[in-house]
Image (cartoon, rainbow, N blue to C red):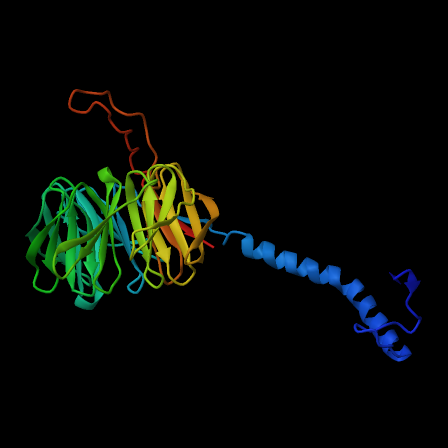
Amino acid sequence: MQDGGQRWPATGIGMHGSAVPKDTEEIMNTKVSFMRHWLPASLALLVAAAALAAAGPGYKVVNTYKVGGEGGWDYLTADAAARRLYISRATHVIVLDLDSGKTVGDIADTPGVHGIALAPELGRGFVSNGREGTVSIFDLKTLATSGKVKVGDNPDAILYDPATQRVFTFNGRSQDSTAIDAVKGTVLGTIKLDGKPEFAASDGKGGVFVNIEDKSELVAIDPNKLEVKSKWPLAPCESPSGLAMDRKHRRLFVGCENKMMAVVNADTGKVLATPAIGDGVDATAFDEETGLAFASCGEGVLTVVREDSPDKFSVAESVPTQQGARTLALDSKTHNVFVVTAKFGPPPAATADNPHPRRTILPDSFVVLVVAK
């Protein structure tokens, strides 16, 4: 090394021009040799650690519960504490053991059932019956129905808000929400919505949110005053369906028809990110412990989105499932995700009343897929 055209003395020169003793120089050379030898290995370890962090969590389908039976399906709800999985099946609700997949009960007489909401502290569950315009109230232990409550027209999503101990149905045809006192089982009032509501979420602190599918909006509701607080556009998200929430960081995860997940600030309504997901999404979920959001997509993919920070989100992996598996439930205890689907045959012939018929469901092909690490 040269300095002003002259070599440094053999003793070496310190940072500020002072001479370095010979023994110190030997120590420095030893350290340099050590670094040259070990630095590549250290870098390799760092690269490996970074690659491991960047890799997906490793979800895959690990089990299939063969349920069978007739009829379509919609929402499913997991009770992690009681180890039960509730599945809507057209005119009744099937209840399975989360760990074994065995049927443990059935809730009958739920015509056009869509969703199931649970109030564990009250020992009650609630089912939205779309064709009947009612909500069934059932006992969580016995699964026996204690009564029905008349609500709006075609109740779809249903939500229990623990902060107010109120149940909210989101009625697709009448475009409103019915509030029910979960303790008394009586209707408290109706909230008018400017469009067709889809999935809903509660922050557990007196805030309720719902997607408006045909307006591509997100609506914030005051569950105490039974009124709309805010309306936020979800662009570029189109036709929002699934909705889940990170309550700690106040982030909402919206499943959008145009193959994206809109991540929204729950206080301002600002769309923070739009990570890509699969086609045909209908449900989303968020795991508070792992920081992972899930979107179940009808094309046969479960998209996993990682919350890198409250303002940064990335696709962690896309897990192959099965065509038609577009609704899900998250088991917060095991972190497993459950999706449901069946095998399909050709659609029936179109008619004037049904110009776009859906494909037929093959008999006894209905299954629950367990997606786990």
